[in-house]
Image (cartoon, rainbow over all chains, first blue to last red):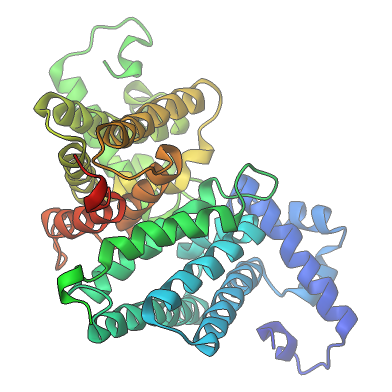
Amino acid sequence: MPRAAAKDGTRRNAKWEARRAAIVDTSARLFAAQGYHATGLTELCDANDLGKGALYHYIGSKEELLAAIHDRVMDEVLQGADRVAEAGGTPPEQLAMLGAELLDVIHRYPDHVWVFLHEFPALTGERAAQFRTRRRAYEQRVEAVLRAGVEAGDFRDIDPWLTARAWLGMHNYTYLWLKPGQRLSARDVAQPFADIFLKGIEASPSRTR
Amino acid sequence: MPRAAAKDGTRRNAKWEARRAAIVDTSARLFAAQGYHATGLTELCDANDLGKGALYHYIGSKEELLAAIHDRVMDEVLQGADRVAEAGGTPPEQLAMLGAELLDVIHRYPDHVWVFLHEFPALTGERAAQFRTRRRAYEQRVEAVLRAGVEAGDFRDIDPWLTARAWLGMHNYTYLWLKPGQRLSARDVAQPFADIFLKGIEASPSRTR
């Protein structure tokens, strides 16, 4: 449940949820284009064709909107990680699938991801804490796959924390150029990236099982 | 020469340059902590212990200040790339040295790099064009080393553009955790990162020279 749904105890219906999701999407576009701090409430109202009271009814506050954009990205990223865990396979297969899922989110949500990576410091208090917790949960999924690969002898003796940072940077940073309608799809990028990373950390032939 | 030096034709001395550099550094800290748009001219004056007229004398405008922060990063990054080119060596050696130089800049200028990576969309007109030109020049240095490595048979048949993006993301994204006083130095990170990347793109043994 989005957190705003329970805010005033009102029961929200599917129509309300859909309108709220559309507001989040439109606002992500605006924040990505001109920055969170530079975007005023009046602009948000205009872009969403709502008065301030109506915007509040759906969102509550500008920071609530920012949190909802972050949640949209984290929901997708964590669902992708769940699919990978359910699919099973070796650690190298798991890591390649995690990469494909992550690039797919970045490709499908260019505005949300832009806002996510640029504006997370604007989240405060409980919202900042929740964001950090969920981001950390995802990072730990990546680290766990790397650790499992070292233990299974698939990967050489790498530092899972540091190697996860290399992997995350390589994939997350694609948000600058991996966009709908451009030359490359998420799939075009996922395979070469997995090739580089898996060859980069694989155990040397003499040490494999 | 920093562009402001020629602005009003006044001859600037070393003391003026040093004061201007200190203002750029202090302002980078402020922008990194709270965002470029959220930081007002009054705060900049307070942090630098200057009146608005004096700040203008050194900087000209808030966007000029943002451009100066970007220039500081690009100057360092391009000088590092020059040192690597002068040092010579094989393409794998060149790529490892480029990585060490880049991580060193990120580690030494955490605030400037944060502002660089978060606020570049706030640059407009000529300043935005100059920033893009210099950033592109650096990217092309990386692509050229990758291309040279493929031609020399050191690297497998990778796409230099896409592989440069993987390399840049992996290195640039360290700005989130590679900071002075933290557990890891730039040197601690440079070697494992070079290992991952070079193994990831090296030509298979049967195809090397």
